[in-house]
Length: 333
Image (cartoon, rainbow, N blue to C red; front, side):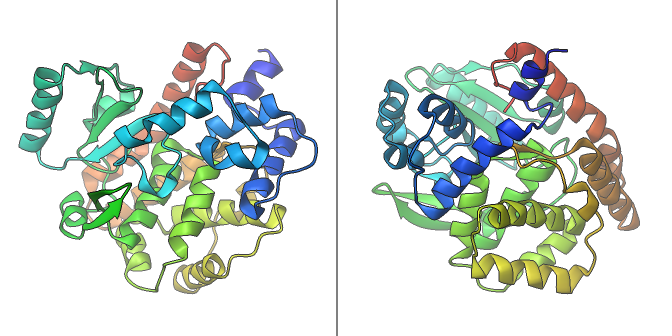
């Protein structure tokens, strides 16, 4: 298989791709643009990592894509609030109750003329609904839970009970508690998306600016993902170290995490190249799902355990399917 194709879809991590990844990461984490850059290459990488608007002024990007992204913000103010002004390609909603999910689907299709989109194997199993609305550039995605295949991490009803209103872009919107925002970000990166974008790193640091020790690590323990959370923080730490960035709140959280859980079981699997978006190594992903499965079994979560056992195979199949569909155009991310 062509090495350039594998590099483009994230199948291999090369020194060349690592160098440009760290160049972009350093620029945004430190707020300083390098004197000479390949604007076309960085523009493409910034888009993949959901930091297009945050890097536009820094690098002097001025393209139709940037202008279109700015114009769309008012339509999708309820997207991923942590990443504003960048908004990605979809708008996610958590809709835990089945009757609410059905009403939402009927409303989107019947009243607003939405067109349902094809789903991956994993998306169908988790019960996701995805659609495009006329006049919107982004797709709307409804989830009954935060999961890959329906395995249990947290109680979505509890997430709704602890939500709060916040004023953003001149509107009042519902957002989750700060602990849930951090936890959901880690779950999505490791167990659902299986990769980290630069926006994940930047947004986590922003969330931690307002972080106070609370229930977060207890929620990590209840979700049976201590290994995954440690691995997630370790990946972020590698990028911060490579970019010579120190963040006291992040350092405090990592220290608290290690004091509570004590062992970093997968440290040896975090020695690959720092290519953005950073794809979780397959061996690490398989082990993390197996570790969660064993802890779910010990806690009597048998359905969740079984779904964790089959998740790695389906994740690989979804990745390969996306790679073939992309034709090497870098659309796997």
